[in-house]
Image (tube, rainbow, N blue to C red):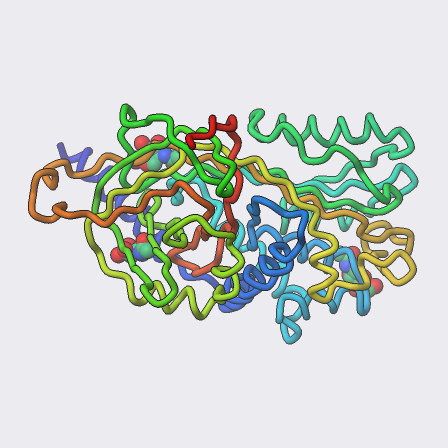
Length: 405
Ligand SMILES: *[C@@H]1O[C@H](CO)[C@@H](O)[C@H](O)[C@H]1NC(C)=O
Ligand SMILES: *[C@@H]1O[C@H](CO)[C@@H](O)[C@H](O)[C@H]1NC(C)=O
Ligand SMILES: *[C@@H]1O[C@H](CO)[C@@H](O)[C@H](O)[C@H]1NC(C)=O
């Protein structure tokens, strides 16, 4: 009895200290700046005609930028700080802050969701990675390094894809089909994210429904359903619904923003700023919501090189200007690709909830949140206010459904 109590007290002390641990001011600044970067990067990507689904982790992008700063010198390095609006931060604070932020938000012990993040820097066979760089980039950003012979393109691409598959337990089978500009350094992020809901969906209430990609194209998806109390807001002026779904232990939440009916997301995207999202969130009210959400896995890979250049990282990506000589000791590298790939799995899993609420007044006349057409989402961290993911789902995997008309 006494022992149990002591153990319980110790556990409690541990939990309290882990949750109360404050972030350093540098980490807080970078959390905030990376949330701004999230929106500017998203807009660049959304404007690209070739982009469909978007799944991007701004905090991971920020740490990849940190890696570029670590390997860069002079203006190649200082541009990174400008992109992160962190011009005034000292190098050591930039690296320590980004590193602290990433380990905080991806800590599996305190975060009740699955998030595997694997990072690798590939270089051409001619390069020699400096020991110092290998050590510090492992320490701050958890990167490992590999030289690859890009002359044999097929085997290079295979080896990247095999590594991604293996390091995500097979969840992310392919990062790329091809590698352009194989003579440079290449950043690869291979991630698997699976939200663990604060209140789980009914395992047995999953059925097949249509997801409207366009008016004339519907795909069949498994749809999961539940009714519960959620923070919800209906923007009647803009014809949008906004829903906040907490993840396990309320450490983070997934925010879904969806037009009333099927329409291209451009109209919604024009409204999207961090300030607007905060305004919507501040207007939310906790009420009964009947949610239907596709039970799907999205495997999305982006090459961010071009978008980062548009946001101001012009030197690192330019063969004639890049100075990444802290990577190899020589001015022989530039950043030729930034592959950023995630498998995002939406599933029924979550924590048990209070069933006593069913049949009570509280759940009467729920708002319907029926996700059968394109939507925008954010995974927002509750402690650091950073954005773990930003993206949109416009075309889930699935077979074309027969035309009903
Ligand atoms: C989340 O927490 C619950 C309850 O403590 C636990 O059963 C579950 O395995 C956790 N899941 C993850 C992904 O951490
Ligand atoms: C954030 O955490 C606080 C404290 O645990 C909790 O009351 C709140 O509901 C959480 N917010 C979200 C959006 O999950
Ligand atoms: C990068 O280069 C600068 C300037 O030469 C040097 O002061 C710094 O220690 C180097 N950083 C690493 C990680 O090697």
